[in-house]
Image: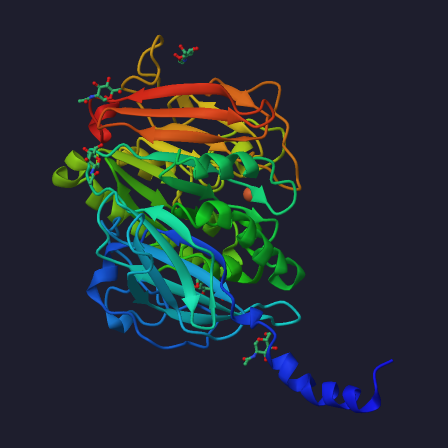
Length: 477
Ligand SMILES: *[C@@H]1O[C@H](CO)[C@@H](O)[C@H](O)[C@H]1NC(C)=O
Ligand SMILES: *[C@@H]1O[C@H](CO)[C@@H](O)[C@H](O)[C@H]1NC(C)=O
Ligand SMILES: *[C@@H]1O[C@H](CO)[C@@H](O)[C@H](O)[C@H]1NC(C)=O
Ligand SMILES: *[C@@H]1O[C@H](CO)[C@@H](O)[C@H](O)[C@H]1NC(C)=O
Ligand SMILES: *[C@@H]1O[C@H](CO)[C@@H](O)[C@H](O)[C@H]1NC(C)=O
Ligand SMILES: [Fe+2]
């Protein structure tokens, strides 16, 4: 038994012992990377904490837009030599990234950014700080080691390779949608392949966590921790899906840091010979959050496509690739929008509000990436419900319409979907296996796609080359 005076001494020490507990609430977590937009360089980041629900976008074009107003018509591109690091702490701390060339002196350089307070809209009104730091002046194609946080808590050390800004660079992507916190079947394979250096970028085409807002946004936290093993090493580029809709997409808008100033809802960027456009199909479905968003996005898309099609731009970035969550076409046997003729996302027949099929066709979009259906489906080149093969023998050599890929089977608690036994003519290949897609934009004329089955231990179950001697609207004729 402890003598009384000793016990008293211990008790009087107790507050000190409690103070000595490591400050875990200041420990960075949920670290992830993204490519910034070009507006980044025009304005130094405001060094303030902002106590509002919507984060002030760090990538502002001019100070008047601060904070958080969406504006039209900017042409955001990948910024050579920059990268945004985003992470979460539960206490207010500084936002610092210390980094250095891999193999060089660790943490030789440092950059500061700022944090925004995100108050979840659930019952508990949980608070968290989302930190964003832009690294600029990185050496193209060089690898860096970094950690993030502040003097009261640092993350593990991660590494990444800076954007190779050459238009002859041939970037390799992994892409998928519908990856959840529960049953994320493809995650382990994606983690390992990312760690092996197989990808330059990951595209997550909507539907995260199932759902980020659940359990007072703890599911969001847990999901962001799960993907850290991918997203802290390569840029993790996203678009919103229907599972993000709760509380007006607030978890999605607050947690990610995509280019532009739309709170990650729609934006575009460049890599290699591709111009990549990310959009929200959800503006066609959640009209309660504002019909004006649909028109704003449409107008932005039109301007962005116009700009990308200027001869001097299309000459160096001939591939225009879109990614959006809900497909225009699909042959699943659920009653989803894409199973209907002239779906809301297509909308040719009664074009008010305006759909996307005509717009994308008119501006010669080459490839359209979708998810939402928990299956993989490849389409023959299609426009207006009609197959537009390049030729019968080589449908993807100089195709006469955009190519659509639907890849929403990464794995989530809703399992996979079933197909309609009688698909239309445009359906070329279908699989209900869990898996994801790989893509390489090889050069101006060649783009490669393949589908990985996780059920079959990583076997490639489908692949195509899209070959184009010519891009743009005139290529269809
Ligand atoms: C740190 O965060 C925790 C959890 O949100 C909170 O209870 C605590 O009061 C915070 N401490 C400080 C110093 O802000
Ligand atoms: C970027 O990629 C191109 C094309 O593959 C290559 O020639 C070039 O050396 C790369 N740049 C750097 C800095 O490694
Ligand atoms: C939903 O969020 C968007 C993007 O921040 C905003 O423009 C819109 O006004 C919001 N809608 C509602 C109903 O709050
Ligand atoms: C398109 O090409 C594929 C592959 O050769 C072929 O099976 C299909 O019948 C073609 N469709 C049309 C309408 O020509
Ligand atoms: C583009 O890549 C393809 C496939 O690797 C190759 O056959 C072709 O020669 C390349 N074209 C040019 C212009 O380098
Ligand atoms: Fe979905």
